[in-house]
Length: 294
Ligand code: NAD
Image (cartoon, rainbow, N blue to C red; front, side, top):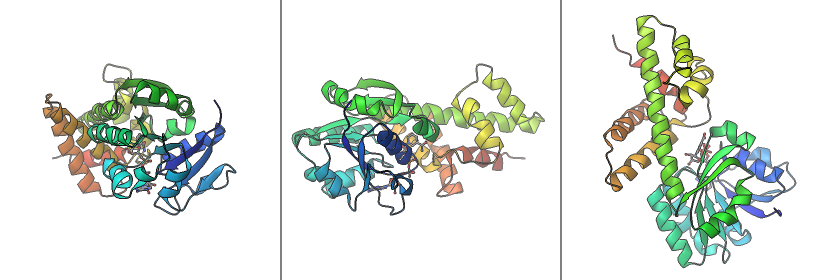
């Protein structure tokens, strides 16, 4: 594909490696983050420009990517701060953060009324796969808009799936993280009980990882981030709690059964409050261990 000038807003744990891969693919990237030091490693790249304000991107780029924490921040930037009204005619906004599907559905309609295009394209795979450019990307939006976004997104991910209309990508992402968070919590409880019986949790995880209990936590998180005590996977516990709240809210809005989702939300909220800002989501293991009872 030909190189494109891309605006990238949100240069955090995920945004930096994603912007780096866009630069490596030959695109020029104009970046912005409210934290002045965010994305410092990008400054050495000749095709990277750090702009002083988000509006500088709105007026200059035909493609804009948001990699922001949540829908509250996306909505404030778009509508309260006037970003949408400064965007170039026909520009494409790709929201790659894990936003709320119903907010994204509404944003797509409001942007369309301004003559702007929208695709939700959240990702899965964490920092490791953001670095290697092998993220799973689930896309929601009009087929023509998704087709326009696809060549660029293929620099960032390996599995790109168009899952439905605008908001559908964010719905699938929230539901995926609900299943992931439920699996992680189940592993934490199982390892803690086994350890109390006198079984080495590393051995338990090895067996589960070769058995039907295998999941992303047994495969990728228990040994490097939990049993090691490192708790540094690069995905904040507060973001996982936010994703669970989004999933439970979505399940309720769809009038689908959600008792288990709400039970998970309660446990992740409790851990978030106990561990405080900055805790990695793998520290759920430490939280469960601290409350392992008599
Ligand atoms: P992060 O907190 O590291 O980065 C977010 C960045 O957005 C920060 O640098 C912050 O300063 C910036 N920001 C906040 N408000 C802003 C604003 N108004 N304008 C400009 N910049 C602003 O978070 P992250 O881990 O990179 O996650 C980003 C999104 O991706 C979240 O929605 C998260 O749920 C999702 N996600 C994260 C992971 C992961 O492993 N970290 C994996 C998949 C999806």
